[in-house]
Image 1 (tube, helix red, strand yellow):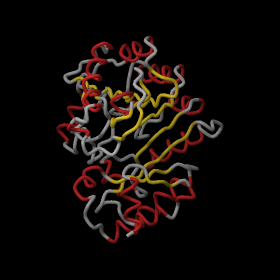
Image 2: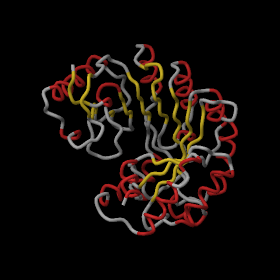
Image 3: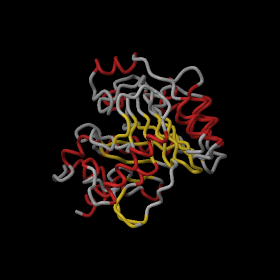
Image 4: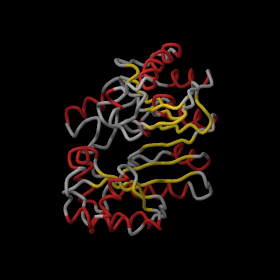
Length: 321
């Protein structure tokens, strides 16, 4: 049947500290499955009912409010089988980094302290149940995030990576690279995998302004080790991200220093993005000369592994002006 819908509703699951969503959008307004979540096993029959409720809305042309302006909603013949092609695990909130644009703390030190000390549930039984019921589909994009996954204790990180391996998922590990983890290195050395790190700076001064921790040299040292771990694995890679923050790092000097750092350690996958909140407020407005020059600089390196990720169409639009 051809109708407007989204693959997130049909095949995605975002497991967060206190809720589970169909959608992993960074914005507050999104399609939710469970609120006030405390780590209980997912009742698959209940999941089917809730999914069916929204599915019937889509089929009738009554698109749910959070989805009405989403670019991922498209019209086609959808596969409605039950099973997950995308699972995002962010059940832990502790993180040794303190990015001022963090989507969880919003840069608030008090919120950050709470996130670093609050009790969080063990997600392993939830993932095991999905595995036992054959709901993690082969080639699933399987994201291990947080918080900071290298700070997960009691073998939980190792277990999550193991499930990713045995289900033949594409494992994505989101880390700040402040702590080097040998198990993470082993995973990306053998699995279909990506290690994603948002560095956002080429100089120590800018890094510390954005991240609000003194770990610039440590991060690049660890990134070199992770890049080396993937050298004999054609299915594994390290992807370093530069989130452009207008007024902070939208200048050629910073961008060039960042690229030089990436090339020096042998990174061939460099993602350029734009800060979410700034983008939400300014995407339809003219941009500064500094920002335009920075975007053009990154665009000139497309043949060397640099690419626009989030807001790709917006970047291309700026280049055409």
